Image (cartoon, rainbow, N blue to C red):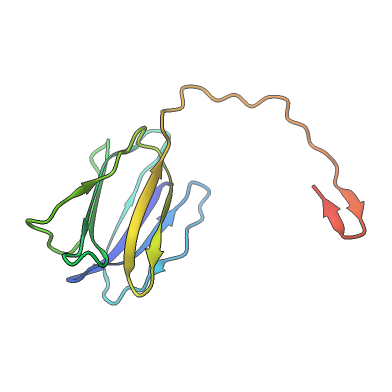
Length: 142
């Protein structure tokens, strides 16, 4: 992942959308009722996530606020006022954000983020083989 956009209101996080390194994005989770939004983008080859904190909305029924900071100092802080509420910090491990899970309807009910456990020191791709597609009665096999 290379970016996150969060829509919020005085009640909490209304919607969230994720952006990927291939230029695509996730569907928008939740339904924004207000145009209060913030987006954070980073290049994972030179920057990573250093901190993620989340709060519930006060009655435990939805995501209240989300805070993301990158190692280069970029910040996303979007949601309702959560002063005095318990904060839930995410273990960011390597800081490389791979995916997200949760549930949503009219707003974001809950959210979890998946991080790569350790940094990638070296990556090698070898023995790449391109196989010609074979025709079958049901179509093409790859």
